[in-house]
Length: 464
Image 1 (cartoon, one colour):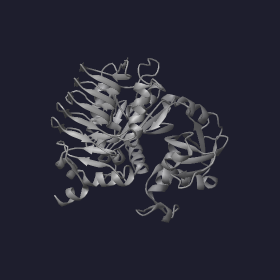
Image 2 (cartoon, rainbow, N blue to C red; image 1 turned 45 degrees about the vertical axis):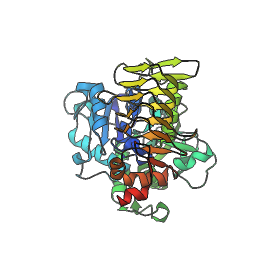
Image 3 (cartoon, rainbow, N blue to C red; image 1 turned 120 degrees about the vertical axis):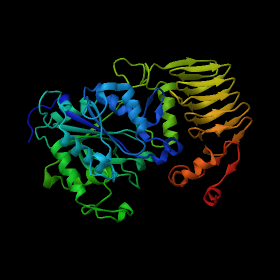
Image 4 (cartoon, rainbow, N blue to C red; image 1 turned 180 degrees about the vertical axis):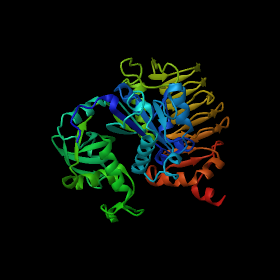
């Protein structure tokens, strides 16, 4: 067992950045979930920024689905420090056992095996043959949050028995428990862990998907999971001791808790009281953007003491008008427009338009342009053009998402009654499986519109 105090430089950070993020609908049609823009940054940057701000600078990105946007961002931000063997490393599944990750536990296992095989000098920042990391911190790339990971490290170091495994968790409302892994604890010791419970659990905290533990404990837990049979049916029908879906929260953690007396592994909880939002669905993504950029509750950007990786200087310009607030970053051209509760990213043109409660994405070579239009309750993706005289709205409490690369014809009227998606017929046909899954899991009444304003249904896409 380890006995000495572990320091931040002895921690390897692994960000799991390979998930397709189908619950975000069109926002992940052409990019992985951690690559979704968030102001001047991307969702995955919150994980890596919190690690760097916590002085944990050895980071591995386990990528898989549509990794290009993620890699472009980190290459731009970190330049020579990004790439194989550098401070920000990338491990696609082809570097592991030669096939796609089967789940978060499989992605974590492959990433650790690859790091150990390479034994890069960067792990401890020393010359010669580097030792393996003492601790490994696993992060998800799809949360907007602030977390000082040194607090988790302090908790870990406070115990004489070093076979402890720390989970960062927080309080959530009872009606949100079904979205998370919920845990009950006595002091710091976890006594019960249920992944996405069907019934509410009293006095329980929600896992944030942030795990810190010794390398050898990680490997033991993950090898045990690897040796189980894959199960593809409903989780309530599986044998958790013999079968798995290769998921850290759903399989590895419950197994470790159930076998703790035999293995000596003790699960601990660290309650994070800083801001954290799971942005796995468009409405939670929109809420987080409004929290951070419009309400500044909290103001995660413009903080020199806890910076978030961003394109350019990352500075957020927040403007208060008689009608409300809008926020912009980067090169934004606004002319004769009324913006109320609007988040605007760089390389965006908004001319003679009325925009309300909307996120407008843009970026280098991904300019979005809105001319003489009315936009309400929307997420406008990159490379979108909205022609003059158009009106695209959804009722309050709903969102219309205009998919990346869509050109809305001039004088188009789209006044949705529920959540809605606007995209070309070809785009929706190619992403039909995603749309069906999105309707099933996120928005049962989502409406589909073509850029000319015509409303269509799934049956017409299936028949075409």
